[in-house]
Image (tube, rainbow, N blue to C red; front, side, top):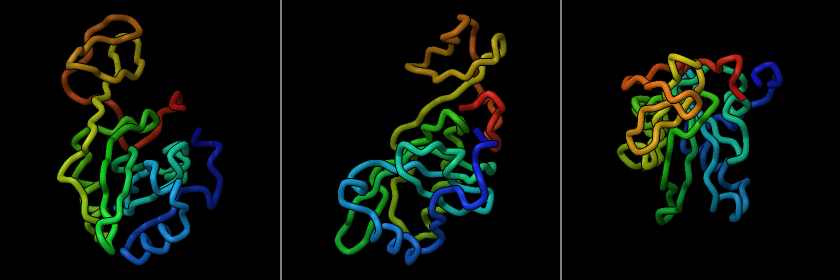
Length: 164
């Protein structure tokens, strides 16, 4: 996936409230009604792309501090983040990546929740090496039935070669 990302690819880099206002002004009402793909780069900057974009493409192929989906709503004359998740099967960010998201949103001046509104728990199976999404605290690999570790064990900064 990373090899397919070329120069100039990547989501819109949003560093300020002005950046966000200009970006939002170019979106249709239909687009703004859906969540967007987001990443927070190692530089702390928020990047946004259409929902069906791959996170690695949104990041321009770079490592990230967090990734997921984010939706917005108008709050009077201002915008705020309505919902935000760490749902990214390419980067599999830990739920502990929230502070990076909150810092990026604070830098932009967007109001936001105090946490991921939808947390996804990712674990790599130590037996078969497959990525898993843990549901209902069931820490068992869906591929080989091995026990999954209680602690996050994926490389959150980089996309593994097998990531799609």
